[in-house]
Length: 501
Image (cartoon, rainbow, N blue to C red; front, side, top):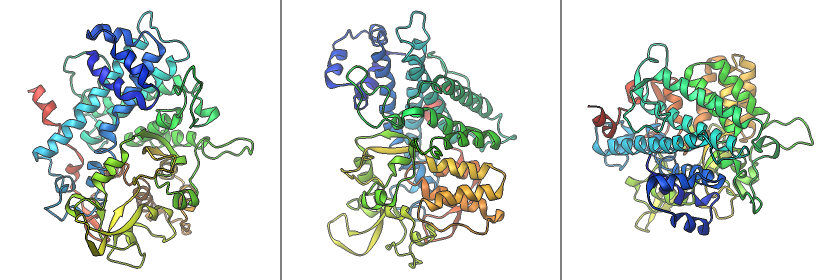
C-alpha cells in the first residue's frame, strides 16, 4: 500500500482530532512513500490520524450515494420512477446497464476497497513486531479498524451479493480483503464474506468491551483535555462498542440467525433503558421539543454511529433544496402535508398526524427560477442546515430505533414484539397498536422502518433481506410497486470485472 493514499486520508482527518499546525508538520516529512508510512506509525497520534482519515473519507461514499442518494432512490421513497426525464430515473428503474450507473457503482466499489486497504495497513502496523502503539490506544485503533473493515465488506455484500439464504450462500460475490497484498484476490462466497464480517466484529467487540468510555461515561460530546484531545471522545462519530453490537445484529439478521440478532440488539438496551435512577442512558429518544422546536430532524441523541460531515448542507442542496429544478430534485408526490389529502404521499406514509417524523417534510412554493408555484411541492428537510443544532453535521448510519425493530422482528413472541414496536411509536407521538395482530406485524415493522431511516440508506437492504416483491411506491400517493428480485443484486462494476478477465 502506497502511503500517498494514506496521506490523502490524513489531510482530511482534521475534522476529528488533528489541528492545522499538526497537518503542516506531517506535510513536511519525507515524500518517499515507505518513509512516510513508517513515519506516520511511529506514534499513537499517527495511528489515530490514519484511522481518523478513514472516518473522514467515508463521507465520499456514505454521505451521498449510500445514504440520501442512490440507495434511497432505489428504495422508491421519492417520485422518480415514472418520469423518464428525471435526473435519477436510472436508479429508480434499476437500469444497471447505463454507463453512468456503472460509474457510480464503480466509485462505491473502488472507494470502499480503498478504505479497506487503508484499514489493513493500520491493522498490520498495530500488530507489527515492535509496534509503536501503546496498550491504551491499541484496543481502540485495532477494534475500530476491524469493525469498519467488517462494515464496508458487509455493505458491499448487501449491494452486490445475492438475497441471502441456503440456496444462495455459496454464490461467489467478491473478495474479503484482509491483508495489504496488492494482488487481485479471489472471489469468495456470500457465506464466507458474512462469516468474515461476523468474525471481525466479534474480535472488535472483545477489544472494546472493557475500555470504551461510552459504556460508563456516555457519548462524551465535548472537547477532551490538551494531552489526548478528542481521541477517546465524540463516540457517536466512531465505531463504538454499542455500534458494533448493532452491526452484529444486522449481520446475524442477514444470515437468518434471529436468535443471535435478538441477543445483540438486546445488549444495546442496557445503553437505552436504564432502571437505576442514578445512571444516565447513553442513548435516548429525542423529545418533541428537540425535534420540532429545536429543528433537530436527525434526532441526534438517538444516533449510535454517524458521519461527521461539514459539507452536509451541500448534499442536501444537491438532492432536496427547492431551488433545484424539479426534475433534478427528490420529493414526495403531492403538495400538502395534510393527513386528509389523499393525493399526497404524506397521508399514506405516516399513519398518525401527530407523528413527529412528519417534521422532516415541508411544502415549498418557490420554483428554481424564483417564481411562485401555486401548488407547491413536498420537500425533504431532514438535512437542511440548522446552525443551532448540535447534530448539524450528522449523517446517521445507525440509530436506536433499529434496535427496537430488530428485537420486534426476531423475538418470536408476538406480544413482546408489539411491546417494542409500541415503545418506538410512543416516542414518535403515535398511537399504539392495540390488536397485537401477528398477520400484519411484519408489514407494520417495515412501515416503521421506512419512516425511521429515510435519508439514511437502509430501506433497500431491508426489502432485499426479506425478498419483497411488492414495496411501497414512490410515484403515487399510496399503494405498492412490483419489485423484480434480480434488481436487488447489483452487477459487479466494470472497473472490477475488467481486472478479472
